[in-house]
Length: 126
Image: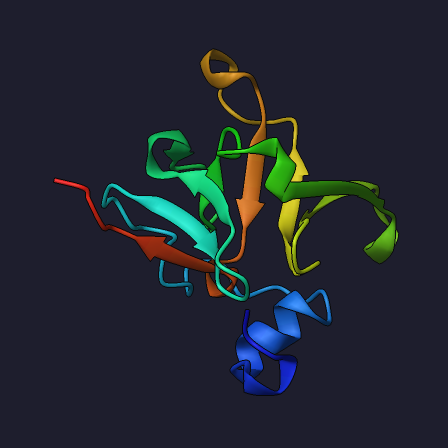
């Protein structure tokens, strides 16, 4: 696990200060490679490329996590709206938010996640 003082400024601002990256600027919003998306701080497996979809929002979007044991969901009333915050259960990094506007054929959920908080592991993928 990376220590907070070792984190790049953009990752620290998002993961520890609950910031967000600008849409269409993150390294994974338009990524189509197969693999597993892991937490950029602790390496916990979070999402599979099999559940990634183009939401048109400019952030990586997933229909479900790889393992619910690695994700924590909490109510977020900041910014004058009620949302569900998504954090890494292992290191408590803020990852993004969960919305109920995902594809109905995939369960209707959209995990809208900041690219800075993810690392794509392509190992073992053809």
